[in-house]
Length: 178
Image (cartoon, rainbow, N blue to C red):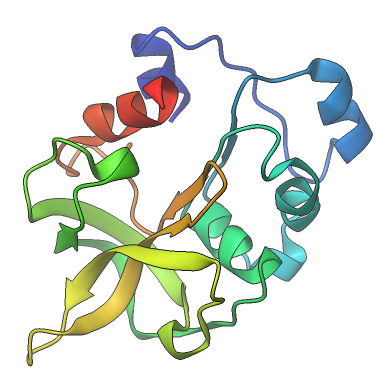
């Protein structure tokens, strides 16, 4: 993630979610915040939930995998076990062509590394589904992207920085240019 953002011209600083406070982040005065992937659930992800609660609407936020789940949970969503564990698996990602998905082919392939997802049946009203995998019936199988309806907050469940993911640079560029 750091490499991709740097290649796009972003000045990137990295902090562990358990080694920084909300006050520390405020003092840094970031222009944007990326909540990155990690190995646990949002409740175990250091200040991730507090970052969403404190900075949503003030600084553009992008959540990747665990960061995406943290956004969903911070706004009242429920995090559940995925239908199947997806570690290093490619999936076609369908999307609405807006926000971080602007100008991306539909669908495109992305790498997934997760066993948890945001429960679509409990998605908070202020969040909208922006990307998904398709069920065998053609509907939404699992949420792969969300966006707040009025704030500059987006999340993706998959890993745009993975070498096997398509269009990761463009997705991140869309976030930086929003």
